[in-house]
Length: 172
Image (cartoon, rainbow, N blue to C red):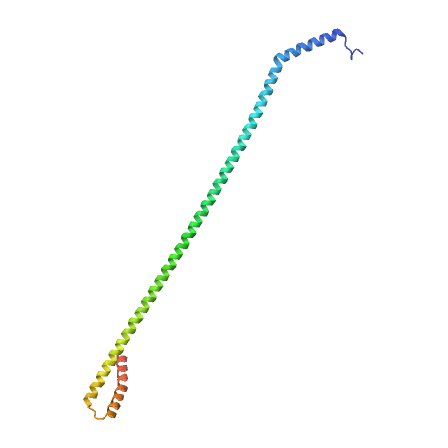
């Protein structure tokens, strides 16, 4: 039983040596160990705080990039809308200009047709007047006595006149 119940002298020296070792450790060892544990705890807290700051900065950068992308998309849509409006305006102006030019050409053509028509009417009147003068001159020269003779001569001269005029037109 010597191992389970030590003798009182042995117990005294064991307690004394344990007390000395504990006192030395308490004086020199525990403060160093406590300081190392505190330094480690501070380092871990500092690392956690740095990681949190990094996460916050990352979230802030992510939010800024999203805002920048949204702004770029809005500008892109604005530019596309402006380009579309400009294109529509150019097309409308081109259509209006083409319609105005077409209307001007139609008006010019109508005016030209009217002028040519008037010239043709004047030419026809001139031809009719000349023809009437020729017929009247020939009638006066012959001094016909009867109206039947005058009518036959007028009919004959009218028949001859278009043939003569047509012949002159072919020569020219």
